[in-house]
Length: 445
Figure 1 (spheres, rainbow, N blue to C red):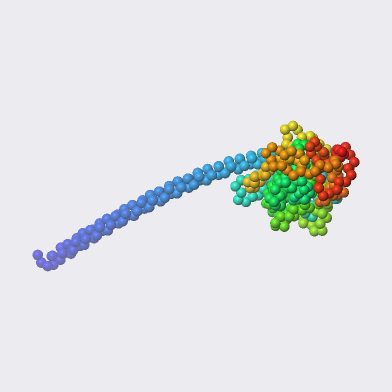
Figure 2: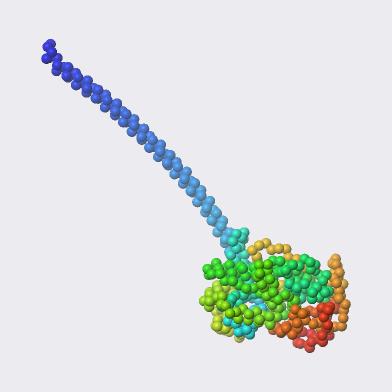
């Protein structure tokens, strides 16, 4: 064959080789592409599986957290419910018994507000839950009386204690015979002693010291009330404090004021004249601390806690909430009704919770009265020489002419002669003539 005849075959063979090479290259590329696609698909599947596993684990953790939070919330709600039930129980108990104990002192303060011509509001038996940050438990507080006016606010702690009371005054400074009844070296202000004649020959001594002292109690209650008012109204209301001894058969020897280390001063009130002077001093201040609207806000808040409300002067007619009958015309059944059998004795008071564990109160000490045989197992108490049965003079801290009559005459324990018990009087004071007899107080023999 000639060269011209071979050229077409050569070209055809070359083209065939090119086609075969292109086919092989395309097939290889297609296989590589398929392998890459398969690898990408596998990688995506793996990532999807990992993501699904992560989502399932996160869901399980979130479900566990939600379950735990739900359990904690359930426990918290159960605890709050139990606390609310306990608070309601305490509040009902305090409201039920509070006004019975405070009826006498309520009328004394109301009479003082009327006599002083004060423009104030008197709230009695305020029961509330204090605001205590970081406290392990919640408790209900009860404030006996609150006097609110434009010139200030006052918290009054009423003590319905009978017998002989020494508040901030050492017994030996009034009655030297009582120097051995208690260890006066351990008495540091604030303190109060109550001596009750439980029998003709025995005096029971009750010691209230430190946090248990009335002055310390009322300052603590005033702080709790101020915090509660601030939390509810958003404005701070400062409360002054005072202690009132209201029992008609109490003889009180007290300092004029109990002053705390921080400078807080608490007047000690035991007579009508002192009470009137205290209210007059509160209402007669030249600077107004509260606006009339703020007084109404505080009154409405404390009234919502179940407080009994009396209004005086510019704060409208004296009436009870929900009643149009003036208090002056209403009878106080609680103050007139006798103590039923089984009730605590008149000088006892309803117990109130506190924000800290109570300190162990000094146990009542039975001390033989001067001139009587000592109780079995007790050290003999100092005695005074029995003298003629005559009425002793009043203490220099409270002269007789400065003790105006309360709603009922006050029989003085020092003037009541009992078998085997001499009359008690300051040893250094002369004995004046016996006072005339009254219907409620027997004349000195």
